[in-house]
Amino acid sequence: MISQAIQPGSVNRYKAMSKGCWLVFAVALLLRAGWGMWRMAHDQGDVSLEFPDEQQYWRMATSFAQGDGLRDEFGFRATRMPLYPGMLSIFTQMPSGILLAKVSHWLFGAGAAMLVAMLGRQLFSPAVGIVAGLLVAFDPFLIFFSSLLLTETLFILVSIALYLCMRPMMMCKPVDQGWSNWLVVGLMSAVCVYVRESCLGLVMLMWLWLVFCAKARTRAIGGAALAMLVVVVALWPWAARNSRVAGEWCWLTHRGGVSLYDGVGPQADGSSDLGDVQMMSEVRDLDETAWNRWFMTASWESMRHDPARIVKLAGVKLLRLWNPLPNVETYQSSAVRAISAIWTIPIYGFALVGAWRLSRIGGSGKWRITVWLLLPVIYISGVHCLFVGSVRYRLPAMPMLELLAAWAVVWLWERRLVHRTKSS
Image (cartoon, rainbow, N blue to C red; front, side, top):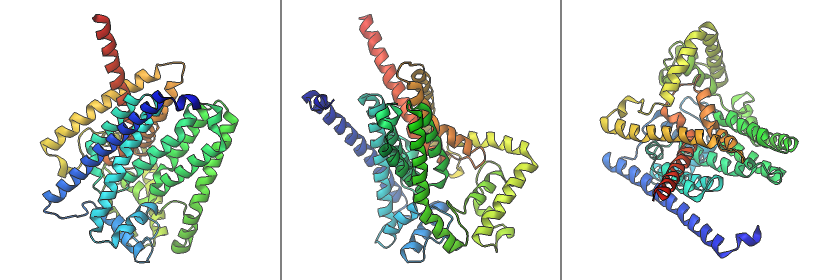
């Protein structure tokens, strides 16, 4: 293996692939920076925060930078995981801090495209890697959200990094199921959870899939237990901090109750009305632990009272989640709708072809890889049968769908070339 790695041909291929990955990075960065600069020029140079969640993250980051901890607009201290607002706090004291924070997001988005190219190369082929990276680079939704101060862009980057950490173990070789590999997976999983708490179930689902696919099953179970231990240890300081500042031992956040109520409460219609929900008279004078508890209790009562309505809402939310057109009323121009449909529908189609064809290839366990790549789709769809549905929440699953779509594109292209060769 070592002798093969240092052969001139191997070195040349490695250099070519490295150049390809950097090309993907450059294209993705150019598109994201170009879009962001165009938006600012279109808004007459105004670098603003468009959505309420952006404003909340910036407020918490500013509070943290000023030494007052992660305090939101209600004065609550444990409504968001700390890594993202902590990262933003670096920019709050800088001139043009919001602009610089957006530049960092452009870099995160470009890095995600590059990592997808690397993952596609390692799983399938250099051609699949480059096509997948370019699909992520040109994804209009990922480009749009890269100029918003939301967790999506950073979370996509770290979740793809987690996939890269898991990739050797998906090859099902016992040598790749070692403790050191599982330790790295646990650390990367903890980073993902520190960015977005809702992904805890996803990373655990991915561990279970690795255990299922492992040839050394007992070793894999021990490795998954190690990864879980790493996440628990990593979350311990955050939980202890929450106990100190909020009066309750909280491993994640106090936001789960209001988010669930937004999705299943009596007012729920599949979309989000969080602004009005948070200002309800019933919770106006509650502290954050009681606030979270009230919403959680009311949510479960609503589900028990009318389960048929919850099932019906689940269908509405799934349609909103995977809608090829934007749901937000302010983005319903004919141009935006056309771009969205022209991009999204073919991606869905090619991803279906890729998943179907790849799962039928025997011998090397490609169907296991197919399911592995579809785990974000499965998990996010399940979660948002309860929580509100939005195009925004499907974004972390899109790079894996685009990787499957890239595999289908390359497979169809190679099949066409073979057919033409035979015909001639």
